Image (cartoon, rainbow over all chains, first blue to last red; front, side, top):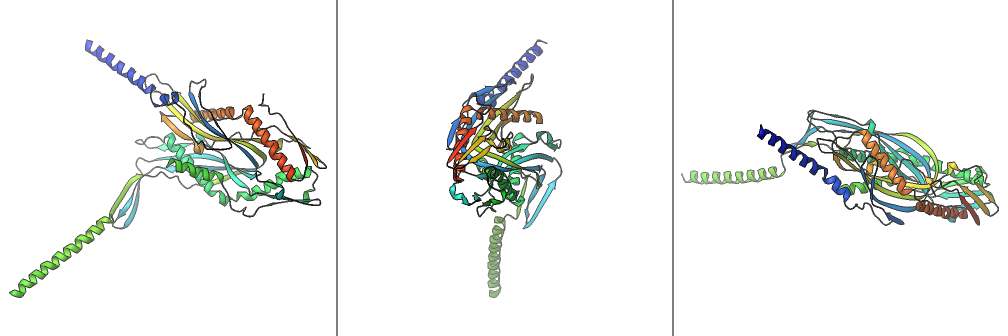
Length: 252
Length: 204
């Protein structure tokens, strides 16, 4: 009986020690340490801010770095794009036997996930290079040549409540890291489809619709206002795609 | 008998040559990996269509952008097992500028070579500015539901707004707004440009 009580005490002490070590682990150690500087590049103004903050729930937050830049962009249209990102994690055997390709999927131990995402794109005209050379006035007529419109990814959002995943008994659920990777791939595929959506045509219309009321309020007649765009407007420029490529490059 | 001996040696030589040729071809065959198999899981997503849900016309002029990253974490304490942790790094770009849809009627009036402009206050142009495609999961231990991730998202957004909407940043955006708007109207031929920007409610 005495030995059994000693045994219980030793097990209890070991368990308390394990809990103590696990709570002093990687996460709390990192939060107490020096903040990591991410994405610092020389913009017009760079402000680094770092520190510890605690909210009411007792969780810690680490502030990283921010970059500030002066802009002159007139956003003329906003596009919301919805996509359901899917992934089937089937065990697959593929290869080649004596020059013959084969592929076989095993329906054992599979898992599947569907992640709804919403991507927000905005079309803008960059006015930082706009000057008197872009304006031509003849009598009561005014002709404005605007720079090429561009499209920027301004936000992407995962509908966490809408995520559905199905996992077989002997497989673990999808991790947060895996889901982040699928979201990244999903947004990348949306941006790859943007040139086919012909968004810049509506962007040009919207830019004209924004500027015409301004010019009419200054006294110009609506039918005396001509707004054109520079040549080469058909080549779609997507800022977000470049960003995503940069991220993927960093990841790999 | 002599010929038989010669024939035997010729046959032996032919056998050696044939064996050598076969050995060489076997080696080449083996180098090509006649059997090459790979067992694993795919990491690529499926092919699903992207649906354009809405197009909205805007009239927003951005004067300052703030690229920001914050790390947010949450902990779920347990009595008899290690605590669950989730740490995520969020990325977002906050855009400060003027929304022309908030302009009053007659906000721009021209008189000869002078134009007077009454602009609405500098504000945050997007409420949703976090790019979750660039969100990184830094550490995950335990099981986390959708609500926990939504809470982290909201906290990251609040933190970014608090960091970006400072008096200094709003002032900087206003200065750039005056500079850019004046440049635009001078390009249109006006000699004098009078600009009044409404005071932002966030400025003290």
